[in-house]
Length: 136
Image 1: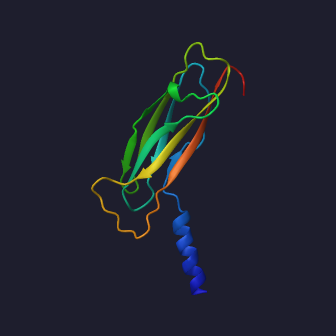
Image 2: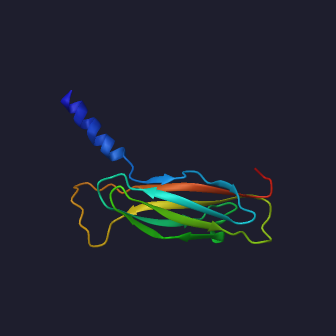
Image 3: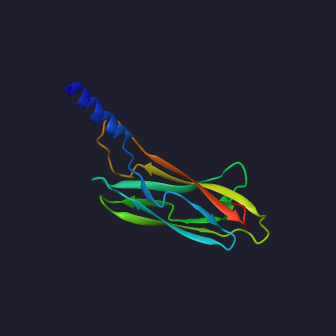
């Protein structure tokens, strides 16, 4: 029984994700431009740093239309901060569904040593969907 409890504890630590983000979905009409604010939460007892960037999609990509700020965030324990995103499609963009991926990736904090023997870094990928016209 003790062995099972230890195994459960180890796996729960491995599977525990440190990235808490809200909203966790983006599906909007972007025809006239859209602002979105994502909130990142650190619910752990340690300082965490995230790199935030966009990843292109294969079909109908809107990544070039997106401004993202900031590109990195350091959160103290129990702190939350905002990531701002603005999508401004060109006037001649065709009606349809467009995509991009918002990536939030945990990274090492420069100059800060980690004492864990095993290091787990988490990454969150959010496929964002934007519509132009009524193609929903």
